[in-house]
Length: 510
Image 1 (cartoon, rainbow, N blue to C red):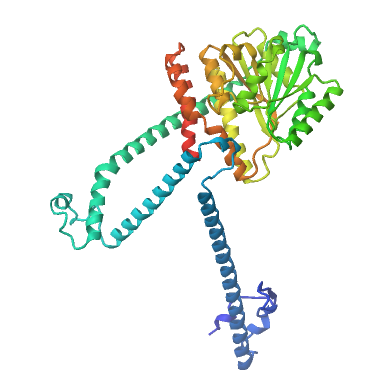
Image 2 (cartoon, helix red, strand yellow; image 1 turned 30 degrees about the vertical axis):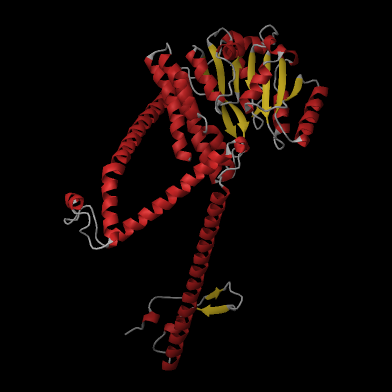
């Protein structure tokens, strides 16, 4: 009978096992060669020696596996410990974000909010302990000996106090906690169905746009006038770059805007600096002065009082006396870099289209392949631009303004009430008010403006906090105006849906 170690055909190869522990040394393990399996010519002592050598190899391999498993467990433990310390430090400090916008909040209200969270967590942990104890003692809702009527009639018929407390907790949960929780669950199901139907309709609309190759096209005469270089068509365009302590990206954005292909006499660039760092202010001033010497029509504005943040900054810039000489305003955040032909591909859409109030362009990301987080953001925002905004722009001429990379008709801004500081989502606020007054929007999916995505999770959370901290207040402010608006039912529902969906997004991030 052939021994187990002699089965199969093997070649004599060396296996080098390196132990990471410095107390262990390098060990060379030799696999059995073909001569070792020749039973007839191998003495009994050699076979015993071979068996001992294979056992030694197996022992070292098992030790290597154990060492790797121990290293994995150690790394997992250290990761959980660091995560727990981070959570404990954040909770102890009373905040989970370092956003500068929240520095003026009422500290007492904020501390009370986090104290409520702590009390809720401790209460949840206590109730979880009750549930675990009840599970091991056999108390279940389906148990035949658990009769609620009997508990009500004989509350002290149990053996100990713990049993009595748990049974009354069951009564409270059934009578007071289950109905509101069931109601909230039903609301979530309804919202899920509404959002799913909305996504399905948008995807079908995107498929129809692709099939029919539908896209906004400007008037042929407007494009011909631009190509011929007639100054009579080039309207006066105001460009605004709001920024605040943007020390890393201000040079790229100013350079990109100053390189726009548009007559210098018919364009004005406003650098709206809200920086509170004197060094950053000085650097931006020097950059603006450099481009002024090169012939660019650019001015620098700085506010001493930063009331209203971005909305207040834009409102203050629009109050300048020379703004009345301009017909359109293009807005770019400090990290956006438009292409030189940006205005030539957007402004012609306004010609002979007096109802058009906004031309919004798509964002393109220069760091979309940096890491997994940027790739996921690229997928999410690509759906937002190509499906949501493109479909809404083609079929209902309305979508939410993205706050940047867009061109507004100044008349539309003025008739809609201008920039208001009542919410932190001033872009959505002005879009809703403009559409309620009859202005139409166009989204250009083939015109892109370069920008960057947050590469760290903390920066991503801050961005999402800024984007989704205002829809709840905007929903309350705009709901009466949307209901009373003199637009058709579908547009009314679209306005309500867009504001409501942004409000629901808060649940996903907080």
